[in-house]
Image (cartoon, rainbow, N blue to C red; front, top):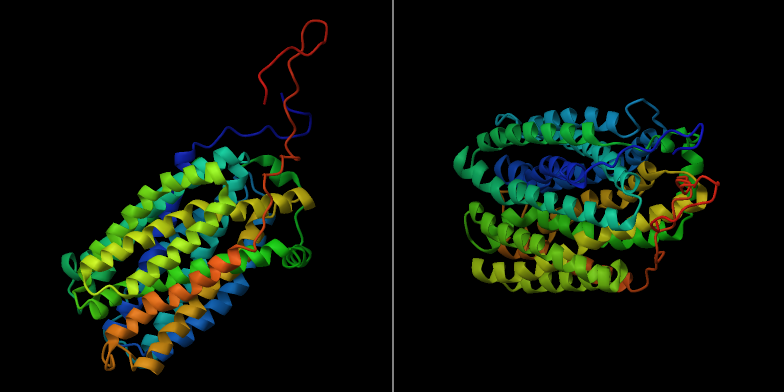
Length: 463
């Protein structure tokens, strides 16, 4: 039964249908981040200093538009829900911009190449933010109980890893061997078209099947400035956000530099990145089951802290790898730590969202996740500065001007910088505290117990 004036709760969205959306949202942005340096700097010859400037500018723009996109989603009121319209609009726009990003004419150089790169990099990041703010906001809404949420999160991380195998490990083979060559751009354009079509189909399928809770849309629309002020005064926002950023930035560096690490540091063709990335991702996928059990036994916070330490140890080992075999061995440790972060990080953030909703009586998942995305946007700044530093310290400016020791340059980029970041995160995580239990759903009325002929409640199963 439902109370008068309260919209009925929707049927439950199957966890697999929600989770598969992660596959669609992951493929485009991971191809972009994983191949942008190789495509623009090493092949097309864009100077790393210009690349660094664009990364800083686009990170600033994205940090500003992210909360606005999340807030607009929270305020959206349509018969299709709050999140689905944004997903259905953002998916084709991201696919189109990704294809354009990898379709830069080979005749472009100098300012023309820089403008093309800047425009489509910023557009891709903006539409990716639109998709992820709305997709992420659906997790606590569709699955308010933590046990259901953990299942859905585990499934979506599994789909993300499948997408990573394709967009990271398989992409170098497709772009440099199947559809193109080591020094051409044709393979990137063809691969981008295929990935764009697949991502669009998957996101639309997921969005059409998501059954949003209409009760969330009956509340008063939150005000932007008041909501932002409330969030920035939340201690958990800063402690969890900054600590999680250490992990996010470290993985962004790896994502951006792995192909050039293979080319310069290991001295192998870029296509060999398939084996290194493939093993890391397979270990990560297998580890999700083990980490889920650890979370059940010791809690998400304890597992989160341990995962940080394992990830830092993996980057330290990767620095000393001298060939593909030893790099893969170190990659196993990286994969184990990464798996732990995937299994726990979103659960830590979800606890913060639950506590905010319980305290303020407003469901601001879109704005809150976009605000957390501010820390994610630091990825672009740090990635750009880190790449620029290779020119300063090692003389690597582009594929046309790689300097005297590009192998050491990308060993530092891929191993030393991520190690420092994850080591800082491991220490900071020891001081982070989040609510131990998910607060009850105060806004969802319970079903009244069944009554007998005399009006007395009858026995029923405990809820």
